[in-house]
Length: 339
Image 1 (cartoon, rainbow, N blue to C red):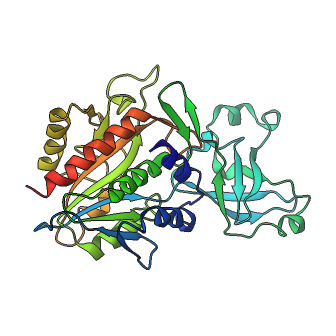
Image 2 (image 1 turned 30 degrees about the vertical axis):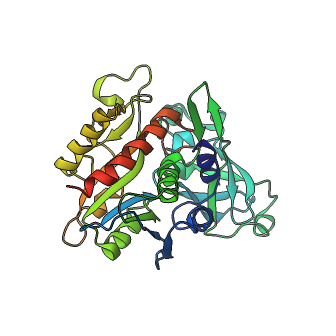
């Protein structure tokens, strides 16, 4: 699974630009299931199981990652840009990025510290004060390589930290995509729909469409969620911790999850001796926010991989959490359809 995750994470596909990652996923699953691409770009797959259930289950994850978009080219050839998805400006300054279809390398710059007033130095950085230097000598030079509206991607290596941790961009939510690919490649107990959604990072847009299209009875949403388990962060503000297993949420900013499914996930974890935790803060959100209120209502549960430094070029997860999330979802997908 680690090699699969590496291939998925290194693909460049911000919200609204998911073609590269979708093509990779199709190559991985095309011999195991039926699939179609809807008008918004969601990849909707049907995997025949050993049995046909009375109710319909959808398992989903989003393909898109956070990034940026070119908004202007200045006379000196540097690029102005805005974020696509929620990116903290403080993790952006000095980062290497790739711009446009030709993946032109650039560096995110900002006003030099010696040109800042004392008041400015004490403030958090703002995206509006940043630019991207691609080495162009003028606006005309830059326009040979870059167009307004070009996508901008974090440049990041996939690396192993210590004995059991992984660092990369786009782990949110290529981890969920990798879990689904593995589930598709196995024969499930029951017929199951798997959906790789687009545009989650800019407002849960893909999941609104795919959930409306399928109208399932149940949904399992796979995600990566914020772990703040570092020195100096106490109590509930840690949210969840690396190495403590899958995260099954009872509530976040967009969803109150189905109580029976929430309990079922923890019961399965206990039965199979899989570490499992919940979020200790009502924070964040995911595609469940759109899915559970679609149509007549969809009973929804979310299973997430805890991840430090989310929405940055250096997301960090524990490999064991990734694998245990896969094992939990594998059993949960069977048991849900036996309720």
